[in-house]
Image (tube, rainbow, N blue to C red):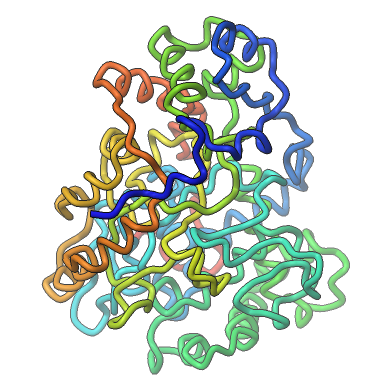
Length: 462
């Protein structure tokens, strides 16, 4: 098996640390005393890091909440944003790969549907958590960053819609909200099932958005809510899906800010906020183990893309000879150098947002952490039984196609950027203790975010 690239490393610490380190806090100085190789800890979060800073119009947030849970925005009116990003599943779905349009149930109990209403394929990538995505530092969305802030574009964002993306989106989180409704596997449905699905199959995103806006305009309660939130609207006919996306983004940003974990309190000066094990793990994370070389900054992400030899499972994104591969960032940049690179995930609430990996390959936090210590061996030893996937014979048949191919595994290994690290069980336990200390207690019970009803009258239950 080929060796990982080593040119980006000096010893155990990547050169990139020289460009992403942040000014040390008082807590960082204490932690780093006598540890010259330890990267300084991030600064505490503050209101100015976020788009809305806690002053967002509550009416806009409430409208976004209703839209987030309303299946009206899916082609067959059977899925919502919340289907794959539900508060009761910590803004995810608990599955390695989501079961989108056509499935039944919520979270880990969701199945693949039955008869003519069953899903066509699994959604190819894991449903990422939404915590803290209202922070200004998040300039790119999706695992491959295909929606990103770009002032050179007419809309202010680079996206798969190109020049067709509207120009009045509030932020990149709103831009992201424009796209799940255009995906056949996520929300639109298959061609021939409904007019939204037909438009999506023709890559006519403008028509998709217009058809969904027409549905909203046809419901008096929604019209009244849009007028309250957007008083500049001259008439109901002016309501667009862009308004809906802006409201959804406001809800996500305000409801799911998560920056009061024990680690956050430690950064703000509470020396007793972390357990001894968590403090030891923090020193390893920011020191000799080098986790912070990629998980850097305020939200423990460098917002870049890295290849870490994550096993490839599921239907793939259409790449490779049979479409079962997922080339990651290369799909956006078209550069072979970016093959198998995926966005560094932020780590607040990481302990409650599994499965982990761009395709949810690992169903335990320990397993994905240990993968990073010895990625090539973990890739070679990987068994798909570690994933959380509702079974169906035809879907199961393709889930392991890419990983079972020696040549494809070798290509993933060749692209790996991580070196093997010898980490003891005790040290791993300490790192896990630190990762658990990144959980904001207010995120442990999100029942408050689920509405009792939605204006369309469609059921909230699956």
